[in-house]
Length: 283
Image 1 (cartoon, rainbow, N blue to C red):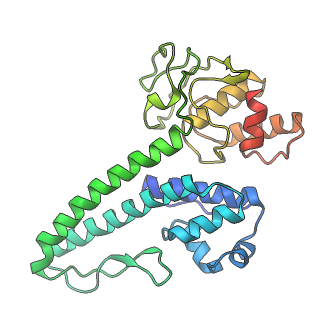
Image 2 (cartoon, helix red, strand yellow):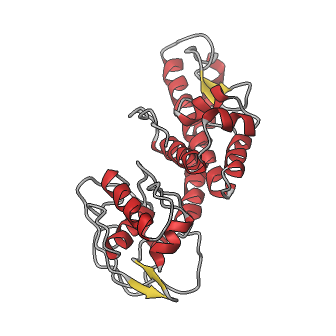
């Protein structure tokens, strides 16, 4: 397993989420960075930038990563588009601030030769372009919000079933869930340190659920935070493997519990919750 460099605290949450998912895919595949470069159209130095949060990869890179790792690219591409909008919006906002102070020179952000979104110089635009830039920033912010909504639907509600999940979970305010609540109705997950989620397990169509997610494919590893993590923590606890606090954060104790559970069902004990581990947890 790779020992990843900690991502900077200043990194936008949407970019951070993309990087974590790409790292999890790479680790799960067992490919080294050089092997990844050999199997894709992108160099090792490009993957170093993408996997350390220094640049947002182009769509083609994300699609190739999913392909060589044997994963569906749809979800990863949606995360990438949201991350790219966030990155460009931050760069544009910084440009606007410097332009207001009369700075001159090359723009802060742009698209590199490889198609990835990268940082740049410090000078602002000519004075005549400021109203147009403000309009572009407003349009960019609206597009980012729409993409975030689409990505949330793809990540949080991949099932779109016509029924309802088991009752007994807790909603996003921490209250008892109403019967028939679907996991996607909880809204976007926000990790709150110290907040615990209740685990009420029941069966639906022969499979175990805790009402937080119906996922059977989400990849969960260290630093993941989501409703899927809450679901996995509840199921691990149900099977007798203590994941620590059920808070939606995939930390060392949750990973240790996942490894012990994987050994008990004859799966590779890598501590990464993927399709095979989900299948065993649901039984």
